[in-house]
Image 1: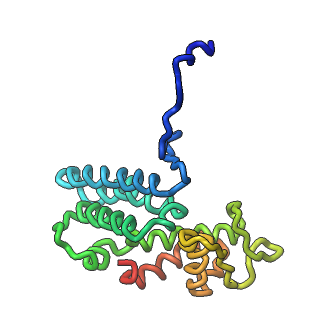
Image 2: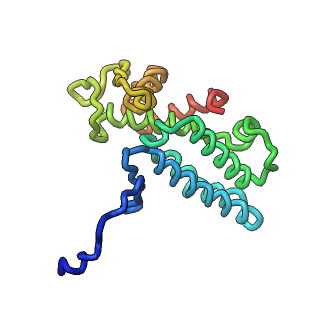
Image 3: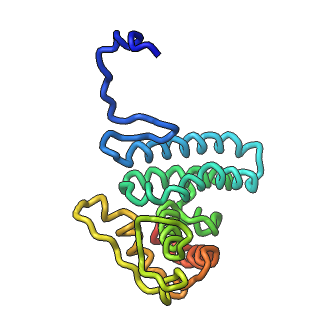
Length: 219
């Protein structure tokens, strides 16, 4: 390529953020653009569900919800764990709307009634974050995934008898909401019988039952 082609370029404009390969990158490595992108994706899907509900049964709508809404909430624990309360509240509003479309409920249906009477196996946004974060940590504990987070292990690669894990400390306020810190604290609050699970499937199954039993604290 001839350099002369770029001779007319006098400079490159500075941008605060840019999308590269579908991933928003902020000039200060902020998580905020990724949360904005996530919120926009879910918001579009809520609009689609509002139109589809008139022509499709609830079981089909529920499959669409899990594929295009819930999957975004559950697959991004590292991002959502450091989201602000306002950002989480916005996502909760979108989840509520999506589920009301799925079950063809009135927009005025109370959130508590929605999760108690209709979505009996679905966790609210904060519950999904708790579930995903704790599952992520348990995968590290079991040696299923590699991570910079390291916890004490036995010779078999498992920690001994569901011992508590240390919460990584840091001076910055945002770090206190990260998986390394807050996630570890939440993981330690899980009953020891669940933390002893030797497989990730068993852990997830028991953890979900445990979180659903105290769903009110996530609403």
